[in-house]
Length: 388
Image (cartoon, rainbow, N blue to C red):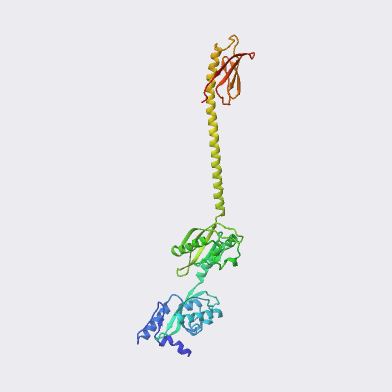
């Protein structure tokens, strides 16, 4: 019976599902078989043919090179010989899927080589059919994942050791991976974050923004400066910005997003400090403008007062020359000015010049009293000069 199974590929025309589809005409079975065997033999990837029991009926050189076995150590052997019991169950499930759907994809297998090395691979398989269309086996293509796994491990290392909070989510916003900076930022344990929806930690409005960001990642491969304000385990709302790029499958399909969060608390504090400094500066400018207004007003009043004093000096000279001075024989030695508010200002007269100056404004009209050296009044007058 085993011999008959092994002769299925040799003695019957076959139809292979998928891209390699063969439907040889009657009488051309040998040509079809040779063509199919040529496709398998010359395929760059490891390709094998098995029956529905998992027995290997045919394999190409890439399989022998990958596993390090001779052909006689592989052909007619069960696939289960090279994989673990758990993976044997997965391979059996994959064969069932081939029978039901005609194809299976991305089954993880880790066959052990002749040297004992466990080699991570993925299996894509399509149905091997007889002339009546019945599935009689599978054509499997293995993909060596060692380099990809190294690249994935390197990427995971970059995420883990990144100084910024970095996480990986699927297209449903489920968190698949996060680094320590994320846990430190939000205050949650890994088991409280991993496999949880990111939407649990943000508001409904931000949920819509994040969903739109995921769509942009799928369409453009990247999104930038999305504002998110996740809530920490302690209930604090933390302002952040999100930059995200596409996480792709080996065939280029976008399957998720790699997000980098930037804690904006210090930035926003700097902005608030700058706003406060700006407001304080504006207040100081207003105070300075008021001070300048007072100083300029005072200067203008002093100028006006000096003009009035010049007029007063002239009037004193007129009185000394004989105006209303009662005793012309006595000279004027002192002048007292009294304004309408009752304030008095005094100064001496030196060679006919009143040396009177004051910082106080003078209210007009004003009474002028002239005194001699012995403080006797020698003259009085009133002036109604207008203070400008």
